[in-house]
Length: 500
Ligand code: BES
Ligand code: MN
Ligand code: ZN
Image 1 (cartoon, rainbow, N blue to C red):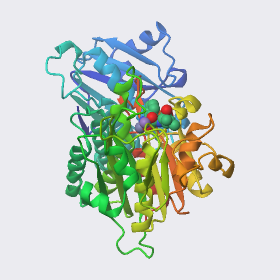
Image 2: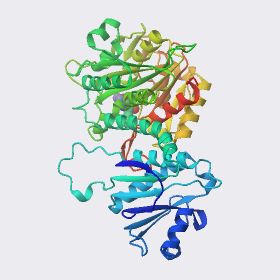
Image 3: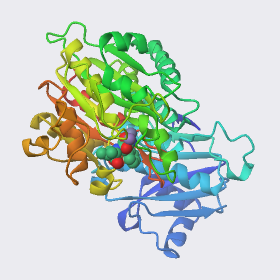
Image 4: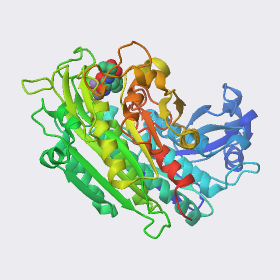
């Protein structure tokens, strides 16, 4: 789907999309179209339940007086509530509706509305952003798809008086959408295509944005002493990798310490010797979503030349059962020097991150460190698919992340950490064990384990197991890989870590 901005003019074909405010109050475009068609819009509204509430939609086919094939009335709701998120949702809903209708071209006038929080160029940009986010589709492996099942919408034309202004407002959002597509692609790919080596190779593409990419292979990881991470990968024919991605967008900053983003990248999680049941195991192809989000977020920052020093570090492994796999009760010496008793090989994400977090804080001395991981099924029990869990050793960092999440509709809910939980992972034979002796608080236990490897750096852990993949369409997130976290992190950086 192509998005274009142009000066206002009457469309002569395709769908004409016009907005109507709450209580059937016409926008200027709707009013003029109603006049031109001899009141068709008014009559159609009167014959339907369309009230102009947000989410209301009404399709009018082949109206008299104009040559367009269709008019789509879209409810805008209350004008003062028409913020960026609402407009993005609107853009997403329009795309979905036009694809359902089989339309290929649509035109949408965007004009200043008295009382609206945003000016027309920003409104147009946000509608376009939402449209792009919803138009995502992972279809590279469908070679025989029926025409009637394919999306039809090829062009969305947004008409604004200030074309240059709209384009300028859209440019950074367009780049963020590109980065979200990258993440969604990586997370959607099957595990025979995306495994540690191939995922690391994909990271090299980021060099095109001015990002420095460094790939550590298993020999280098062994030399460093990342035995916790290596232990997870030792049962697989696909050897582990760690990738470091550096975006130095603020080389002259007074404080050059970077913001660090760390990702769990288990390209497939069978559970290892503590093997998972076969039903649903296919979901574990997206157990690398944390790393996919880190890759996308670093690209998003570089693509819009964010004035921030950021480093992304992803730990890539495949967790397989085999004759070389690690056993429950194995003890590994992690990079930090702490020994870990591995009592359950399916609690592998924390083992990977233990070494990645330690490495990151030790090498980069970051201002703050944020990890993203599909770490526990327990976070789905607690929060379902609406919120990701956040656990942190720092209140300010937590508040900033929660606020950024609110602003982009990627919501976070804080779960506790504390000494009482920490005692549950004391091992009888090693420094720490990778599961608790008690049932319950599974996500917190995961966070508590990670906490032992952050060396008191301000740190937050985002457990995205419930939000990385979606089984149903949402306005700006089609079902499948969501890329939850890319927008949040981009916003978090823009709000707090960028020099102006
Ligand atoms: N990758 C899983 C967590 C997961 C489960 C993500 C469902 C997405 C959907 C993780 O590696 C895992 O297996 N965690 C275990 C931990 C347990 C053994 C302490 C879990 O949640 O059962
Ligand atoms: Mn697991
Ligand atoms: Zn896992």
